[in-house]
Length: 64
Image (cartoon, rainbow, N blue to C red; front, side, top):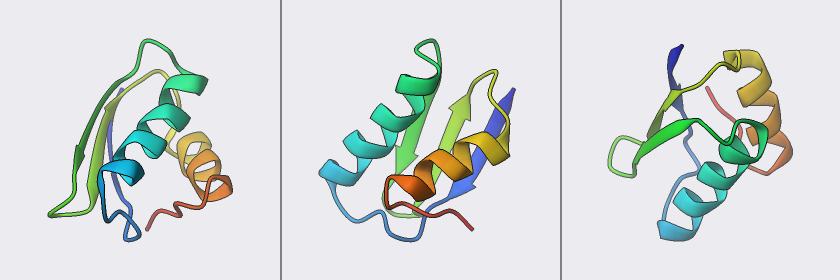
């Protein structure tokens, strides 16, 4: 499933690594693309948007 999430707190390469690690910890096969300019993340994963949003929020990166 392809998902797009908006993460307003994305601001640097460290944020990109952190959110990517959160996703890939839950789904090692996930493909993640992060765009710092638009503060969005596109994910191809078997996980649901709610599972990803909850995990990202717990890591300090709440989604809209």
